[in-house]
Image (tube, rainbow, N blue to C red; front, top):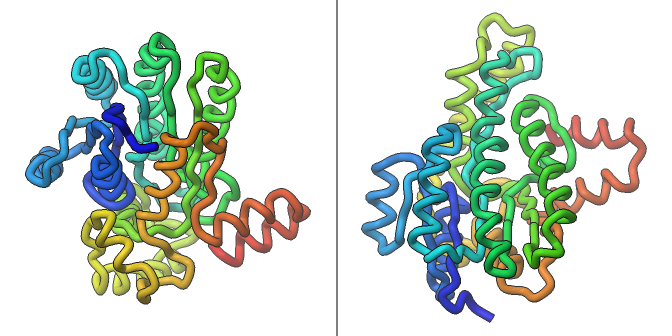
Length: 298
C-alpha cells in the first residue's frame, strides 16, 4: 500500500529526518506538505518540488495558521501528521535556566501538542488517521548533559502513550519512532544552543564542556552533513560515516512508511542498535546498572 494521494504534514523538513521523509513520502504518492521554520528553507524545498508551509512550533499563532492551512489544502481531510521538528538543548541540569527549559518545551512538546490537537478533530470526522511522533532513545533512557531534551522526549512519550489509548476507537493510530544516532545537522544545532544559552565559563562543569566541544566541533566541521534525499541516503549505507551504529535518515523513513501505510502499525519503532539496546536494558536491568550503562554512553 502506498500513499494513494493521502495527505501528510511533515514538520522539520529543512534537513535530516524531515527532509528525507518528505521526499520519500512524495515519491510514494503521498500528498506531502513539508513544514520548516525559516523562509530560506521553504524556498529551497519549493525549488525541489515540495509543497511547503512555514511553521514555528514555539509560536502559537504559527501553529494555528499552519493547522488551518493544512485543513484548507486537504479539504478537511489530513490523514497523517509526522511531528518531527525539534532541537536539542545541551547542558547540565543545574546550568539550565527556567527560560531555557521553557523554550525547549515550547518547541519540542507544547507546539507538537497544539498542532496535533488542531488536526485530530478532522481525523475523527474522517473516520481515522495516523499521528506519528519522532521521539528518541532519550525518551526511553536519560543520559547526562541532555536534561532538557531528555525531559521533552519523556513528555512526548507519555502524551503519545495516553493519546494512543484515547483515540483508538476513532480509528486514529498514534505511533512513536525512536531513533538513536542518525546522520543529520542535529548536533550542529545543539552546539549552537549550548553556546547561546549555557554559561559554560561559570559552570562547575566547564572542563567537561570544553572537553566535549574539543571532540565534537572538529568532527562536525569535517562532515557538514548536507540534506539527503532517499536515494542519496541509501547510497551512503555501508560506508563509514561516523560512529559505528549511526544510520542514515532513510532508516526513519522506512518506519514512517510502515506507521502510515500498514493496517496494523506498531506503537513504537526502535531505530538503530543503541535504541534497541537501551530499550531492552530499561526493561531488564536494575536501576543502578542502567545508570552505569547510561553513564558510559553519555
